Length: 607
Image (tube, rainbow, N blue to C red; front, side, top):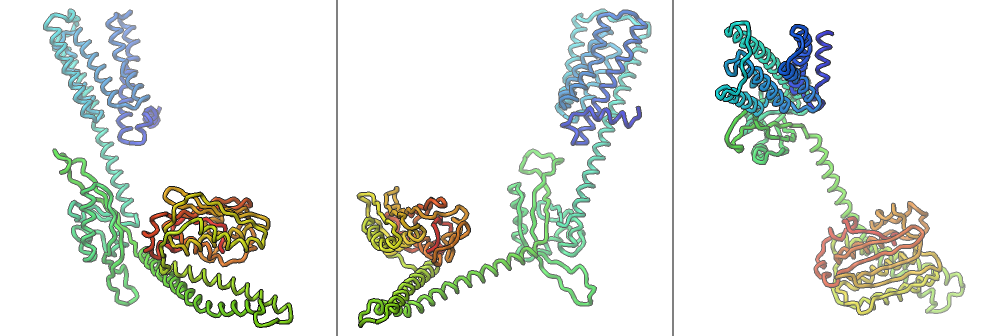
């Protein structure tokens, strides 16, 4: 079997927990290899020993078992991956074998006693100081025990050998020295492997740092640069050597230097990553076009993290020296995008404000002629100044009157919505009876429901407390909800308005058995000029403003808005208004009332 194949075989015996770490795997493989080969050598020699002396004695059998014990220790390490425990087992086994053999050959004066120095040396291969101390203690305790046994006459009569004692002592010392030399070679091999892996790791990370598009720098506690990657050309337009020391700090914009230094101190103080954005002086990378290129400031983002120096030893954890590794990237393009987004947002807000003012002004301009159209069409329809003569003219006058009222309703909603968005809708708080409010709204809308044979009912809990709110606004909320319910309920249906006490709120609910709302359409509702139309045809007129007005008015009162609906089975809309806290909401601004401010919106469709 070739050497490479043999090495691969012993490498396959390493436990999976150590295979991902080359240095750790090397230690495991060295331990397994040496112990397996030592145990196998004992197995090979033992038949030769039997052939030369015949039947072995009990002591010889015990010694043989001790000699092959490294095989079991190697198997234990291969199965568990616990190197420290395997070294302790090996140290205990080897110490026991040495003491056993030395006890039969003269105790502490035995030629085999020199082998005891091998125990702590072998434990050093574990790279665990505790294991070395434990092995030293085991060997020392064994020597003391052996000496005490000889002193009190507990050892058996030493075996006799034909050789001179000096020769035996030399053989024992030489064999122990040879074994110790093998251990020294193993230790040297592990050291070389460690150095090789360290160099590989450094080369790997240096290669990563030099080829990364982000600049990687290493700083001391004061922020001075100890190392900078080649990406400095892309970030500052200069070589990495120019950033060493205070080179990077000197290129940071003067106004951003406090934040730059504070990032290092905060990272060192908290031992957590810290990010900071700053402007950095960037020189042009080329000037081949014949024009003069001046250095400009570009935006950069740096994320720094402290790295303790593990090799430093100190008595206080607070005094452990450290370096700070920072990764810096150019974010000029991102900053430009953010500026464009802010600019676009400001433009959109300005356009929205202009739209609000335009709608408010147009609503005022439209109200005056609409009132005249509605008034004169009503005079014509009722023939207050004499008969028109032709029946069709009276029908036309009625159509003009109805269309004018509808248009005036839309204009009023636009005006109310613009006031709410602009924060100019004044809430006048007064105490009023909820029962009277519900009754008045039902009476007002009963005529409209009668046109479609819709039964409008009311259900008010007895002895409700008075509500402190804007009565006109609350009436508008109920009328809009009733109008929606009637609009989206087929002929012969029913609409019910209820009022109940819910904690510290008055809950107003409008329930219908109309067409209902699809789940996907609910989030779209409550915004101006929006109606649900994705799940069913839009066969109902309306500008989609009624629900926006309701949402804004509820928000001005500090109330809440909820819905329960199922497509084809009807809708229940619930509005909760605080009984006593309405006055606190009278100073609400346009931000709290504007559509899309996060209030739960759920209504069947826009008015």
